[in-house]
Image (cartoon, rainbow, N blue to C red; front, side, top):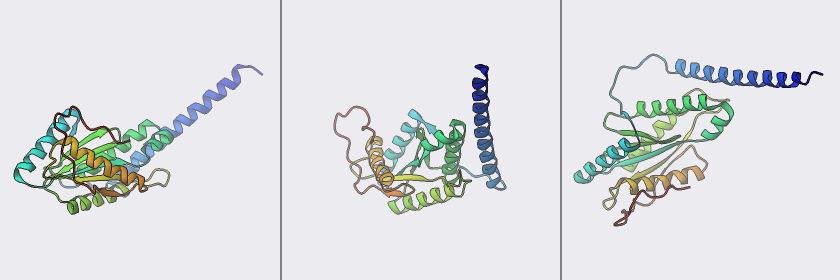
Length: 217
């Protein structure tokens, strides 16, 4: 047998697999567009912020809330099983899922909310004023909207949400984010697809501390 034949067959099989993944991703995007139905009436939605812009906007909102003595809710939203989506369907589909997740948050949000992408599959949602009960209702809306989207391999998209409410002694961004991060970790350890409110108020940032709190693993 010509030694080049097996290599050629392998290349054909590989290209067929890639084409199948692309067709699947295109089909999922088409179902997503169809599932949205007619365009809703225009309304003001929060703008997405990244990196330093997100930190500055969130910090300013926390300072405003502290001066007004009003609570702020921070929701740390993380897609469940996102690594598996990337591994099975490829990064093109993974990127589309991320964009769709961001659109869900924007649809649920109001103009006064602070919304931004914190990490690859993780978003921050800040609402002021808001109590723990308000934040839980918001989390339920986010999860219900996400589950209404087209499924991937007959599996609905789901997310875990960690919620923290500002305390009188902790109004800095890092301490509140740390509390939300711990709540998110509890939601993930509980099986995912749930929202958990931090059981402890955010701790005051230590005097002279430099840099953010470490990321919870």
